[in-house]
Length: 394
Image (cartoon, rainbow, N blue to C red):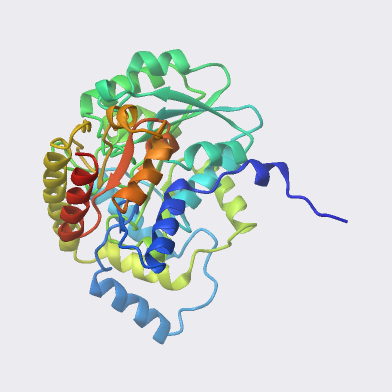
């Protein structure tokens, strides 16, 4: 008897960003000098005081199960963080700690969505939003935020997309993959639309909130419109702010009833996040924050350097970002003039072969013709990669 996979597993595509990183690593192992600009993680080491907290937790035997939704200490640190940085007040039963930001959103989708429920997702979008919605038997409704619109959606687009089936709308600012940041006025205009539709849960994915230049930090739709408090879920984590991607700690804050449902889902999947990582994350949130500002300044400098270089390369048009550590250049002119290259996926393969540079095709984010470039790598690597792109596309 031949066993077959479920329909959901057969239809589910692996994460394109992780696939590009893995391909670059395999080519590098085979002897090619590949420069990877696909990784969505800071290239800095986790700060020493955070690592020391993890070591101390191990030495003191803090290696057992914790509460499913996180330790009391970490939840208290998260509550303090929200009050300190966002001027938002939460109680412990409004907080859940999960195994990364992706896990938080997965738990939310499983806890909230019924078959056929619609989730509005602005494009370009983080690659995992639509698949996670589909795994919960929801329906992704994509709104295109074009480059001319600064990769952001308008209130009119949002209003037109909301139906009686709309259950959730996602706002990711700063954005992965574009680095776009909604201004206070833009968030206020979106909030005016959402206030008219009380059945819609607002999901604010703030994982890049500490990496912002140009606009005020720690700003989201809830800080702009407190009237949405009873139906807004904030997603965040320690991975980007403290360079702790591998520690796998994300968290969510929102209505207690939904948090309770997320806790039930998590109790039947992962149970608690790693105890040691929780101890380290408590120290990250409570301790010295100077490393966060240091990384921000480095990312800002890299952004300006890469942006200037990209816009000098023949056929590339790249708008400035306002946060995160990505640029999202338009390569459509390049695709049009390269023989044998019909789309951004083929362009990605061409660049790997001709320039030995790895980037993620924009079609993975709902924006064909673009490429996502991560500048979360050394300036030496960035300079070398840009030299190669310039030469290959001359």
